[in-house]
Length: 470
Image (spheres, rainbow, N blue to C red):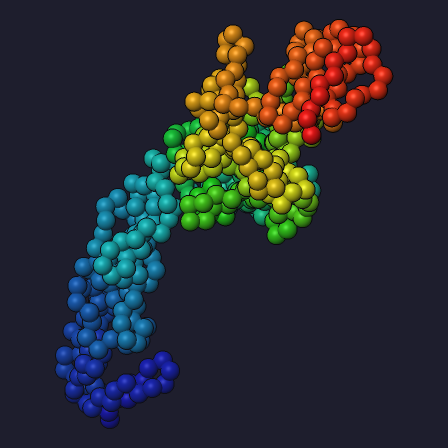
């Protein structure tokens, strides 16, 4: 009668007729009255003892079957599709041949490795025995209210930093004395090592400004940075690398002092309405304002002496508030400089249509003066003559001897009797001229002498009477 062979779950794996064998599994299955059953049975037992030890995968394995892989020296189990390591780690000092999933304890360094199928990868710990404790370690630190779980960073068995979610004060003296008297939420560095975070950061909540000693030319101490929340000083130049420039004031839009730049031009502006800009100096301990700009009027006030190198061009009026007289220390005042030749001089504002003027007439090459648009030459002494006979039309002047020469002289009448010329000596002299009767003889007393066509009445001794025929 044939044998029906079932698996543990009741599934029929084979039906074996009498006197035959079946090789559908890793073992040899035999039927009733098979002549060589004793050898096959013994071989099956040996295979079970050695878990089919071989470098080759067993033929027709069953799910759950064990196989000792002699090539990798590991025990594996069949999961229905492939043999997988059973999880046992091999402990040895040299790297073994492995299969994917194998574990190996390196007894030299006391580190565990896992085989990926192509290489051994370290599982842990990350440090070898010779390196001592290095890397992160999760541990509890006691404080007055109990304990906090933290992650400590070690290097060669020295705790360098503690990562904590709480801020607390350790109660254990070992932490306090070894650089962690206070642990803050975040990363706290060991204070006894002078430990610091080095590298780049995109954001920081605070900057330690307790030191100004730079580590290098590129690692700058916090105390060397300018503060935005307090007055500060810089030993270097301050450059604003944009045209927006410098802005002073809490309201930049309409209450600020600005220094800006546009197209190479610089503008200094007080944008506060009707507010001033003043420049002050310390003169011997006294604050003075030599220059002030008045916002309400646009006026400019200069206080003190002003030295100008170059031209001073004034398009409006010049007013002196301290005096009605302007004083100039220069030997000469030069006008019309740099222009083509044109009349130039002094204008006094009057009620006339063209004011009063004294100017140099460039077309005539002499000075002229006048008002109401009527001007005449200003005569110099060099323009006058002492000989009006030969140099007619000139203004007369006397010679060194006090003489003057003219072609003729017409005298106006003094009274009905004629005019008189009186010398500086006080005596009266008569100069006869055409159309004039001259009085004379008054030195001898009496009334004025008479020229008449009739006999005068009265008279005194010594009087003269000239008869003029009709």
